[in-house]
Length: 291
Image 1 (cartoon, helix red, strand yellow):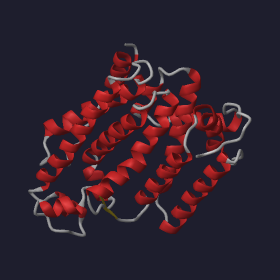
Image 2 (cartoon, rainbow, N blue to C red):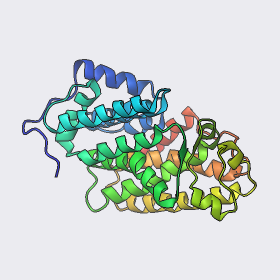
Image 3 (spheres, rainbow, N blue to C red):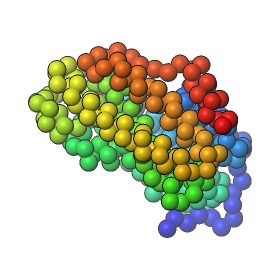
Image 4 (cartoon, rainbow, N blue to C red):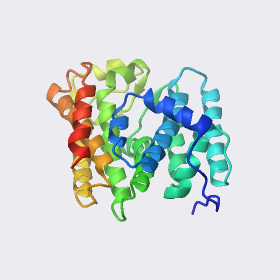
C-alpha cells in the first residue's frame, strides 16, 4: 500500500500553479470543459493530474532518441517516488502532492501512465494481440481514470470498474479516430493478431496495411469492443451519485459523439477526419454538467 507524508501538503502555489495553468489553458481538450463543474479543490487536483499526463505524453511524442526519452520517463518515476516520500522537485510533481494526500491517489496508477508513455515512445509501434491492446489502454487511459475517480470520490465498488470501462472506450475511440495520423508516424495500434485473422499480412508500411480492403473488418471489431465498453461505463455511471460522476459523463458524451460519427462515416474512409466542435463540447458540458 502506498504511503505519503503524514502532514498534508498545501495546494499548488507559485511556479507549480502557474505551470499547471499554462498546460491546462493550452490544451484545448474536452477535458477542460468536463472539469469546469468540479469544486475548486477537485478541479485543481484534476488539472494537476492532467498536467502530469501532458508532461509524460510530450516526452513520448516529441522528436528525440529513444534512450533520451526513457531517461526522461525514468526521471518521472523517480519524481513519483519522491512525492510519495514527502518530497518532490518538478513544478508539476509538486502540484500533485496535495491531491495525492487529500484523495489517496495510488502510486501504481501514476507509474502505469509512465509505462504507457514508454510504450508510445518507441520509434515504431505495433501491437501484438488484444491482450497487449488492453494493457496499452489500461496504462494510458484506464490508469488516468483510476486517479480521476478517486478525486471524484466515486464510492466503491464502482470507481475502478467505471475507470476501466470508460478509459478503454475512450482510448479505442482515439485509436480509430487517429489511424491516419498514427500511421504517418509508423504507429499502428490495431493488433497484429486481429489483422492476420482478417487476412491482412504483416507489413512494414502502416499506411499500406490500412489500405487493405479487409481493414474495415478489423475496425468493426475494435469498434464493437469500444461500443461494449461505452455501454458498460454508462451502466456503471447510472449506479453512482450523479453529482460525483458528472465529469466522467461529460467526457463519455463527447467521445460517444466522436465514436458515432466514426461509425457513420465508415471504416473504408478511415483517412477522413472526424471531430466534435468546441461549441458542441461546451453544449455537452452544460447539458450534462448541470443535471
